[in-house]
Structure formats: C-alpha cells, structure tokens
Length: 265
Image (cartoon, rainbow, N blue to C red; front, side):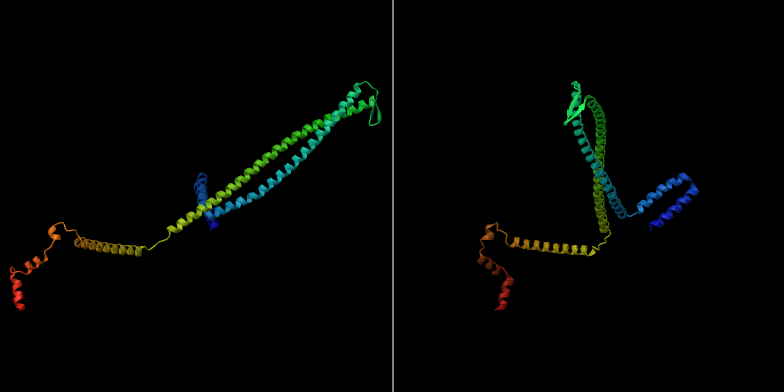
C-alpha cells in the first residue's frame, strides 16, 4: 500500500514538472511529502522510533570502548611521568654531587670503590647533565600529553553521559507517546459504540409512573388520617349527649319515622 502510494506520488510530481515548472514542483514535493508522512500510521512511526533508539546502542558501546582505551593510556602516562620524575630527582642529586666534587679542586675521586680522575668526572658530569635536560624536556612533553589525554577523556565521558541521558529520555518519550496513543484509540473505540437506549428510557418512564401513583396513594392515606384523627376544638364536639341525639333523630318531629314504625307493627 505504501509502495503504491509512493509510485502514484512520483507520477504526479513528474506530471507537475512537465506542466508547471520547477517552482510548482518544489511546492508539490512539500505537499506530497507531508501527505505521505500523514498517511503513515502512528504505530508504525513509534515502532520506527524504537528501532532508531535501539540502533544507538552500538554507537554507545563504541564510545565506551574508546573511553576505556583513553583511560588506559592516561593511566600508563601517569605511571611513566611518575617514574621519570623520581629518576630525574635522583639524577639531579648525582649531578649536584659531581659538580660539588669538581668545585673542590681535587684531581682524584673515589666512587663505589674505584678511582676516577677529574677529567673523567667532568666528562661524566657533562654527559649526565645533557641527559638530564633531555629527560626533563621529555617529562614536560609527557605531562602536556597527559593533560591533553585527560581533557579528551573527560570530554568523551561527558559526551557518553549526554548520549545515555538522551537515549533514556527518548525511551521515556516514546513510551509516553505510546500510552497517549492507546488512550486516543480507546476513546475512539468508545465513541464508535451505538447503544439502543430506548428500552432504558421506557423503563425510566414506567418507574416514574409507578412513583407518581405511590405518591398519590400516600397523600390520600395521609388526608384520611388527618380527617379522622383531628383534635376537637369545641366542647360540643368533645362532650356528646348521645341519648338526646337519638331522641331528636327518632322523635315526634319526623313524620317519616312514625310512618315507618306504624308499618312495622
């Protein structure tokens, strides 16, 4: 699919070059490149980023090996400089001793049980002194070389540490982007769900109807209770004369009652 898109894009660019010229082709190239990049899946780009990060490891290992070699050279130079300085200090003492012996004006000298003439001592002193100056210059040169190696080693270490830190940060960034992509995919999947909530709406309506009927029944019950259980406010309602009420109800003042009684006899 990607190869087919690339072929189509190349054909379009060639046609644009023939029809519109170089400037239009440059614009078309930019648009085509952006379109092609946008068509590449993000998951593929993340996979490619992980692969590029993985490819950093050989370069890191090469730098670590180079730093190790420089560290070995620095240690070697440090030992050489230290040994040369110790030997140079001993040579300086010997030169001063021979020089002091010659300054004494003596013609014969004894060293390690052997006799030497003043001429022999002077010749030996000349040779020792020339060698001393050469060794001293060599030590100065080695010290400069040692300092240069140390600076190179420190710079290489800083570069390696920076590369390791950048690699770690890239790994964290890729994982963060991957997590964000998964969240986007989940959100997109959720938005694609089409729920039929008509049954839910009907059920809610039924529940509301039942609730209304129960509330009405409760109000009726409360109304009856309030009616029959109300507190009498007048004494006439509280102190009833039941015999008087019966007499009044069935007394002579009601012809219909008398007629009813006569019919029953």
